[in-house]
Amino acid sequence: MSFLKKIKNFLLFILLVTFSLSQHTQASQFNYYADLVSDWSKIFPDQNRNAAGPKFFKHILSKKISYQDFLEYNKLYCAVSGSLIDPNNKPEFVYLKSVENNEKICGFYHRCCIPCSCDLMKYSKVKKMKYTFTDGKKEFFVLTIKNPCGKDDFPIEVNKNYFCNGAKLDHKQVYVLDDRLVIGLFHNAGKCNEQSIASIENHEVTGQYCALRNKAPIEEVKGGMGDVFIRLAKDN
Image 1 (spheres, helix red, strand yellow):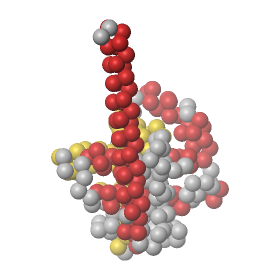
Image 2 (cartoon, one colour):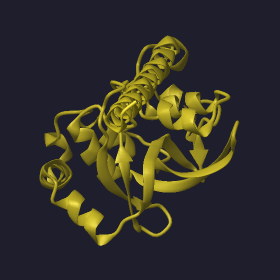
Image 3 (cartoon, helix red, strand yellow):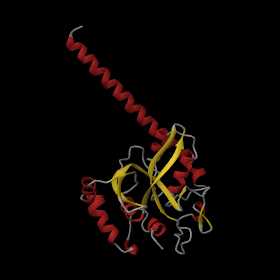
Image 4 (tube, one colour):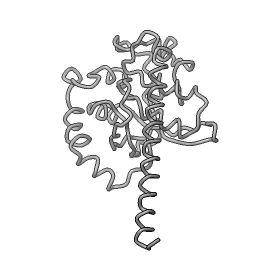
């Protein structure tokens, strides 16, 4: 066999392996998605998923899964709106402040629509969490908001019984971290550098659009979950 033919056969082999891995990855993503669709009525007995990202997060943790499974499942719902997301979605690169010291933490957020990124950046903070999966203990950043259960203006569009037991968070239904409600996972997160911050603040969505949205009075906020998540997450 000639050297040129060997090279061609090798390149063909690489292409076939790459295609096979790609197909396997896509099939796996759709299997995770199908699993959440199948579990929908268990997660939301009354079918109301408004701002109920925390219910997805808790449900996923209740499964006996690996850390990689955990990552994949958490790409498929919007922590702000509670809606499912297409398996082929592309995440938004954003920063949020740390609960402990307001340090900016950069990472990727899988959202259903553009306004959710803005609302998340303004009204949520991140916190490190440790959890033991089938392949061992892992540490990662999660998206959190303050306990909303004591609010007089708790949004009527959201099923309060999903989150709360009186004025306290219901540990049986949602994951609670130092009395903060965990609403979702912050993917590939870490301390921001200057380049990352500049990239986010100069982006047409996370910079320009979000700056306008987040300056608007709450009664003028439209799009995404509108003011529903904002009323749930904002300080009393």
